[in-house]
Length: 497
Image 1 (cartoon, one colour):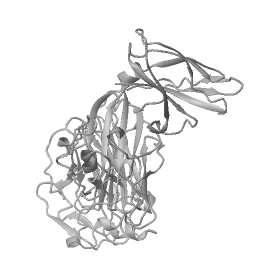
Image 2 (cartoon, one colour):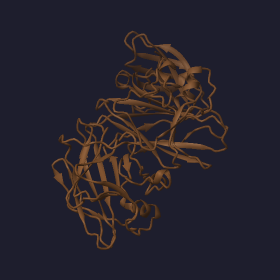
Image 3 (cartoon, one colour):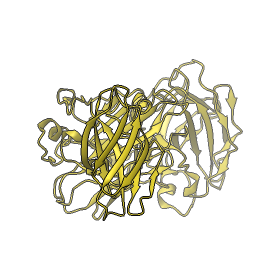
Image 4 (cartoon, one colour):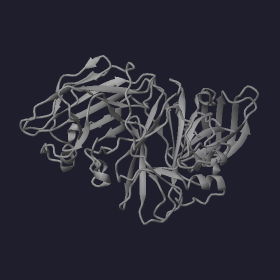
């Protein structure tokens, strides 16, 4: 289905305005042995002295973290100690496949490096533990990771901290053909961190050589590729299979945790438990799943079953991300995301979704016994990267805000927008609405939708007339649908597939 241009009719005084914005669219990693293959060149910044939590970059979207050696047999692990909103993984983030390797070196873990004495106890704790090389005077260490999106730009940040007196030392970092300035481990003072940026190539991997490989305290990787801005509609409460948009053509989906999702079509759309979105990556904190979220109790069994499954982050109010790529630059895409927790757990939980610089209104999980959760639709134009990242930021009246996603789809609506009907004139004469339109499907059916509030979700607009375009895809309509007592009304043409 396609929607025509939004028209606004004022009455009385017979003032008429057509809004010509074509807006309304309806619808634990093991060690990785590094290879000698050429890797992307890293552009290194100047090393910086460790000073406080603001050291930890929050640019872009978090791709992976590692606090090597910081496991303690599962007690007091690194991921219990977030810094500046970033959680460092004791064994390295799943998916990123962090590894440390080299030849002729002896690797060990040590937790007695000097406290850098910043104002943050978590940061201090993490920086007193490291993976280190006994033969640091002569050997190098290679740090590597994988599964990045080709063409995307990434930021890498490394920390070195010893700080004990009479322990001087520096390491350089080499990525591709570029080598950094020496980074100090500290001598009676905190050590340093260094940041570099690079563009991932077709290998989807990167390796950095530390010379000498004295030690490594922390690592993080962030995807800083500019992402398109999403125009969000108003969240809508889950009600039935017609919620599932069929606008345009299917591009990909994700029904997290449900391996049988592709046997449960809803409104003609088949969702994939193992996402078919190109280069799909769930962010490092999206690491928990559950199949017992309450049923939304719609009329469709498949829909109900899918929405009982979900992926969530068990890290409180820390945002979670997921991303994909492979879209055609310049094409317009529709995204639809569902969140549902129909159990009554005594908390009002919700989350906002951010795409580019735009953040949606909060979506309710329905977790306080208020009923089903909600879905939201957004649209954007793919940029030259062909990728998108969404960030879910949770809120709760209780102790478990936890970002969550139950269902997701992406549709390419470019062709639909190009062929959408266009309202060319609108007028009011008493109770009569006069309206003309072009660019509709020849002899195709349409519904005229009406609302007194332009911000209402499309599902809440009132159908006032069903008719057909003529053989040329045009409309010349005069119909008595106007209530002279209403100061203004908005109209949309919706085609019928």
